[in-house]
Image 1 (cartoon, rainbow over the protein chains, first blue to last red):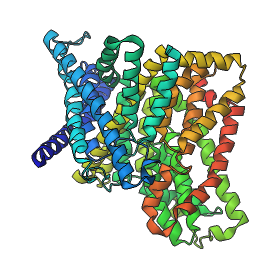
Image 2 (image 1 turned 60 degrees about the vertical axis):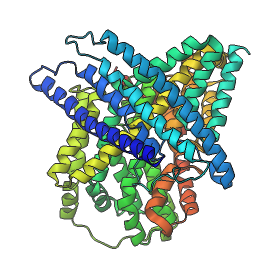
Image 3 (image 1 turned 180 degrees about the vertical axis):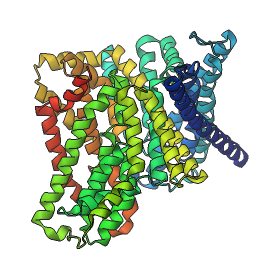
Image 4 (image 1 turned 135 degrees about the vertical axis):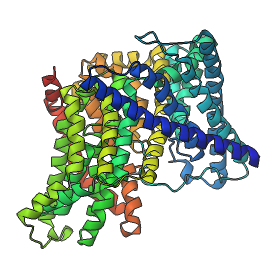
Length: 177
Length: 435
């Protein structure tokens, strides 16, 4: 159990690092594209395709497991926070079960979809054709590790609430508005 | 059960699940998946779950969201905004409640570099609240002014909320940004009036600052604002002259904020990492809900609930005003338990068809909805901006005092709303000019 938790923890962090590198790369890529089209009227090839099918998919799905690890997926606390410990445990088990099912289903489906796109060698139809299928795998990878994080939390939840506390964080961290 | 009944049960189920602390993304997605299964069978349900997560996120226009987030986080982490408050302070401190007015002015300027209300409240709160408390300003006033001023972050462009609204409503984001300018300025004016009136009636709220500021100091203070002015000029200049699109503006703005921070020598690896991590975390948390909301929109559309509701509204002959007040009540109720994004994404699938069927401008509705969800950020019990400020002030100001102080600013918000409803031109004038 301990080992499994360490492995998912490492994997979540690894995916997080990958996504922050891609976030930086996306900024540079788009900025260069703007500069080039401004000064030499010749933008980089396939920027739109690369941004949408690689950077964006990665940025949406790869950090999911890490966000779950930090308990920063958005939920509503109004009732939960007023319940006794037993009630909290029951609600948490319920929510974790549903989350595991949803993310599990999504992982399963998108994995086969990615394999299918890999087999047909999905590519873009624009001026320059680039392979699009690799980006498809970001979805099941991100959702899959998040499912693993959820499952481990679910198994431990009846015995401890150690996994449920949000970390004390910087004020803007995880802020959605 | 008829499709219509399934649709209604779906809405009820989502609300129950969300109240049971199921993550909003999961509640929306799972209910939609189940709903599709019940209505159309297993194949369409699986098909939807396969296609939507990827196709919704692999989206060029939406790439501006992580980039605008990054721009705001970099500004915040590298203290690009420190000079703003100082400048606003030397220029505005002669007014009654001068420091509070300066916080409003500073926040309005910061809002033009940030797409997020929480980041704006946090950035201003960190600088302005300690200074006001030190000058013996009323603690409730000091904390609440920044909590309220923060809500301009999502109103004054760029705005994450407006980009997401634009995607769901299929409205041009540049038009939404233009439409937001006047309501944003009106909000700033309203908040300023609240402070001036309150502090004139009760000078003990804000003891006047006894200091003479020379013209030279005023000019010098303006010099400190160059990082933000340069950033805003770069982003909006390029945006409205068409050098780059609203989508590209995010990336250019983020890159500019890095360059400016580097020039000011406040950029280092640590703050870069924090800003990038915040960007990635927030992006994933926003989009996984948006994927669920997209599934939910499709589920509701098949069930026919939005169509039936808009037919009902038209049949009732509900006037413009009734519709607006109804929406406001729903938003303010939801605002008690949900954050702005959650409210938007839960209600748009139902409300957009209704407003569209009644021939109400979706640009105008976008601004109305944004203003309403932002008011939810400062109303109890879940007033995220208030919590952000509470995190900054710690034990020195009780949370009840902040909520009480915020009430005054909510009056100003109601006034701005009334103007937007009575004179839709204040919203639609600027986007109209752009054709």
